[in-house]
Length: 109
Image (cartoon, rainbow, N blue to C red; front, side):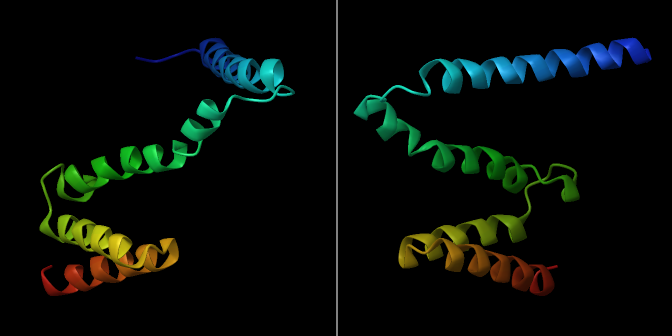
């Protein structure tokens, strides 16, 4: 389906306005108020919730293998989780997971 230039710009403008409205509703309306403790407690887990949601599809349905489960990526994910639980250090987890991914890629193929 082909869109005209006017339709494309309308979509871009609509998405921009929607994004602005979402941010304004949170930051503009309650930005100067003190948030309750339960809200702050839940906001601390936002990054922890978003990262697995972004990474899991890359592990279970990698585009490089046309969506087939890949033992290299699965092994690197398991190793990364183990490093994370063992060290509790984000930097070591990232670099350790990357090292395992490259090592498995070159040994298993």
